[in-house]
Length: 108
Length: 116
Image (cartoon, rainbow over all chains, first blue to last red; front, top):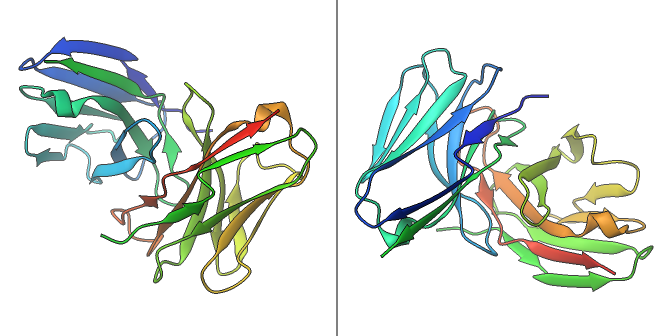
C-alpha cells in the first residue's frame, strides 16, 4: 500500500504570511496531485505534477515535485482567508491515493 | 465547468439496511470511482470502474459493497447491509482518460451517509 504523509496536520496563520505544506512517501509515484477540499464538498484538483523536480505555479501557490518523485511541497505566498481549507496531496493516476491532509486556517 | 452529480446529499439509514448511493458522472468520461471520507479522516479509495467492470478495489470494498452502471448515465454504489462504521461521506469521481497522467479527476459533492 502506498502511503502519503502530510505535514503539518494543522496550520493556523495570519493573513499575509507565507507557508509550506509537505507531502512525503516511501514510494515512487508516477504523478502527484494537490487538491483543496472545503467542508461538505468534494476535493477540487489544484495541480498535477508529473516530472521529478517539476515546479508549477498557480498564482500565489507554488508546487514542487521531488527529484525522486517521492515527495512534493506546496508553498503559499501571502496567504489570504480564502486559502482556508483542507489541502490534500494524492498520488497515482489509475488508483488515486490520498494523503493525510493539512488543515489550513488563515486568520484575517 | 462540467459536474459530477451525487444524490442524495444526505442519507440516514438503520443498521442492517441496504442503501444505494447514486452518481451521474460527466457525460463523456469513461472511468469512475468511489471514495469515502470518515469524519476527520483521510479520503479513502474504494473502487474504480471501467468498461462495465471493476478495475481495482481496496480492502474496504468487501462483499457488502457493489457497484453498477445500470444505464448510460448513472453509476451506483450499493451497501447491502450497512454497519455503524459505514457512516461517512461518500464521493463519486470520474475522469475522461485513465492513461493520461495529468488527466483531471472530477469529484462530486458527496453523499453523507449516517448509519444509526
